[in-house]
Image (tube, rainbow, N blue to C red; front, side):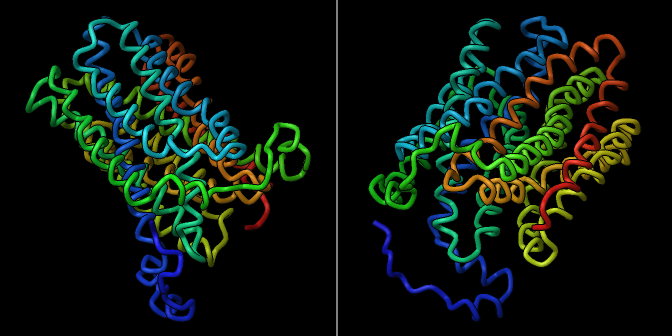
Length: 405
């Protein structure tokens, strides 16, 4: 049981010590939750370098590769609002421990799956586990963050982003060293972390930290039209950002494979891209206390698009690779800010708000991969990647209409 009376640094001391002091002010258990987020999302990151392998193994077309991305989105993202409502209403706690374990076991079995339909089924069920983790993890994070919710959410979000970032390199080097048939071994780390989380953040304390005296309903969520309008704008903004990120992660590896680039190169590129975004998000979240969140989200939208388009047009030159890395960094650093803004404008339903940003908008972006894959078959990968890279610009007007927070 975690002590509720543990002495914490004073607010003045924290301010005087800067970012390092803020990190001390948050509960150590927050870093364990972020670690669980890391291992929950690392398995989602496995998919990026696997797309060309699975494409060759099962003789898939670009639209069929898009279906893989869509199935992952349906399970891991679009289902999150349902989990969010369930957790806000009934305080379900088991998902924080069991969800990463389910994800790890099913996704790690990719190397021994015999057919495309079985692959789709395992992917869907494994991604459901990932979906069940996010709302509960995001709703407990502010209770572990002291008076610094921006930094706490940045740490939690960075854990998942770093996991998703590490996934491509981990699976690429693992397959290169041990072979595709050995992937089930990769489920072991998630089992260890889930056990540690269960012991150090027991179900009773988790339930107490996330208890809500509300009954969340769709009618109640839509009751305040002004707040709902802000929430919908935030969902649309994150959708546009994630079309670009998911489009790069889905279709650029296919292009790299066509250039005969090794699997490890694909893994390294996307790991560096997503890891930098995760690291920068912590700094940006701290900066937002002075600049406000809207201006930083606007930078994410307007700077990420030209980097992505320019990077693809110059790829595979070194300049193109650098621009792709910068694009992924800029497109992802605003994620924790969008989560906090959504929680602020959703009343007493933090899990629902988190699921709309971390799940629903990301899921819609995944659904977009199927029509985008069909467009790519018609116009070719250069035209497709230009559309994908420029997509965040559609959200600029929505961002300008957000409150100045």
